[in-house]
Image (cartoon, rainbow, N blue to C red; front, side, top):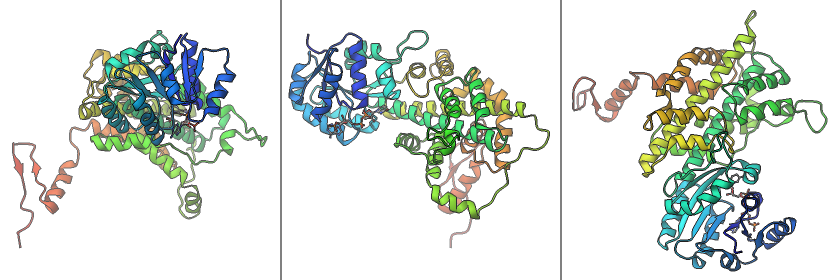
Length: 473
Ligand code: NDP
């Protein structure tokens, strides 16, 4: 039978997604710019229903109509190049899916361009790395709804399944909505990773625990509210010894300079664009940037001094570990509250109808930020679909109330000991700003009016005011 779907791009992601689709009973056409890769995949899996093509024309001609094509190629110029080749070969009603890590504005542009030719274009966020692609990723597709319906049965089969059996895929919204949500997912991932790193550092530098002891702490945390893939792998990482035989924990031989592929940065830039606070993710991006200035930091460390981290005598370490756990959970909640408020602002800005409960639900499995905790977010939106901010949901209000004292202690401890905690600090500062009935922005407005005659509103009467700060010369 003719392939029901085709995959373009036989690097690790495309190959694994093709195999995943094939394993659900489909015949899958495969194509890659460099033919030897297609051939290698076809050879390695000759027992499977994979139909290789070596020209894009043959590939398109091999497919059942309306054609369903998934691109898994290098985002940016690669995606544009493939679309350009495909365009003359496709017919009205065909569905083209871009599963790459594409910037959502590129997806909006491509969706509008292809729509003129009647071709449906779905921009789909794929999370879960190569293993996720093979065994079940979390999928965030956006584009024409009718086009989604044509591919939904396949996507539902290949996606990860949550504990209750629901597939981790849902129609996100029009044009670039899927890639937008994937971008925020990646930003949240940066935030989660940064908070874990800060907490590890405090446990190590201030409380003086060994790497093995910290592994045990994370293992225990993974049994409770903090249960998540990232906490689980942190515990695992901390048990591992250097594979080059130095006998040291592997974390101690890894250079402390974090890389990034730009998706966290996009998320922060977009928060600035739509005008919502995204301090936690942004601090996480900055933390990677400052870590990357390794040589500069080494030089500065010889010149700029701070306190020696030290725990006061008689401190109850066990109680402090519990406070640190609470600080981590509290801060994680602040990060998600910011991320979801960003998506709410984006939905208004770009005219998307986003279902936040469903978005949280499809992140429960398959993706890097997968965690039990996401169910709480889904429940919050089930209770109130138009929730303005997660912190206003009773569950989250209650946790924030109960855990805030711990965060204050832990941030103060970090600052006093000279151990950086930008993510944890951003979390408590966001909480205190968000819950403040009055902020000192009145002074800011006075200054703006003073030097720039920018005017101000009053809190006691209608109208626009300007104060005569000085006599005109
Ligand atoms: P890469 O991002 O390394 O991209 C390599 C693939 O793109 C190859 O098939 C390559 O073909 C093709 N390609 C590059 N430029 C062109 C071009 N101008 N014309 C045609 N084909 C081109 O592969 P990955 O498998 O890692 O990722 C695929 C996509 O999935 C990317 O957008 C990535 O961001 C995204 N993604 C990756 C994840 C991961 O964990 N790796 C997770 C989620 C998404 P050739 O062999 O001929 O060079």
